[in-house]
Length: 365
Figure 1 (cartoon, rainbow, N blue to C red):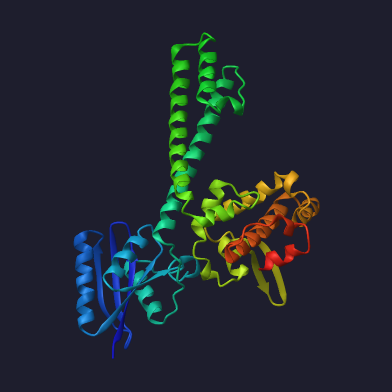
Figure 2 (cartoon, rainbow, N blue to C red):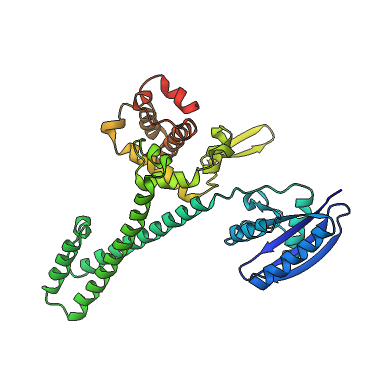
């Protein structure tokens, strides 16, 4: 009969600490540290294959870290089962009063042996690459905003008031430079602006490069096209939602599980017979939650298309009663429900269902 060897691994950037525990008696048979190098990986896998020859099936447990995907792929290629632990749901390690690499690895091994580890979901490689591409664009956009604000402040200091439209093209930016140069300030003043504007031009080119890559992939992604049929979901928002929701099967058709993944469910506090609902949990991917909030904002900005929707009437009523913040979150959750139904049913958005009794059917589909 094959026996289990449960291996907890405390994974870091330069090394990983291993604790291997036998299921039959809970005995620790290996405590070792390896480098995250070719030599280190080879030494560890050879040790595990030796245990396989001794009649053990190898199961590994690691926490979600930056190199967890690489480690998982590498170990699965060796034939080992790997559990990636959801650290948000497993606080035993973070709350430990004896926090060492060896102790953390032993804790993982023990709870793996007891089959009590909450498993994290890792997306496929393509989705991971798209997420990184979107994150790169997000960083570039944030940098562009900071530089534009810097230029606004610089020119205001010289008595030149600028507007957003003056940054929309390279030609208009050059006009700003000429305007400052004509003021008679020192050459260093104008050259400083020239350098900053050149950086802005470079960032714009890089953003366009990222967006061009996404456009090239659009023909092959039906999910993105489907999402873009929803008012309020633009090109980037559609890619963001698609990148985080490719494996819809894991939610089992349950919107509560999906909204929990988004972090849009309220926190719950129970004491005796009282039950209090607090702010939303904000668990799950921040980029995805932000994308859904932007969807809600996009719907609000299109009153000509969405003004007669029932959920918009609910939004304006709640805004008047409880404020804009709560109303936007409530609208975000409703839009998330609609997107959930669209992704599950693989059907395009139907605006006629937003102004009739069919809306409730669509939201619960």
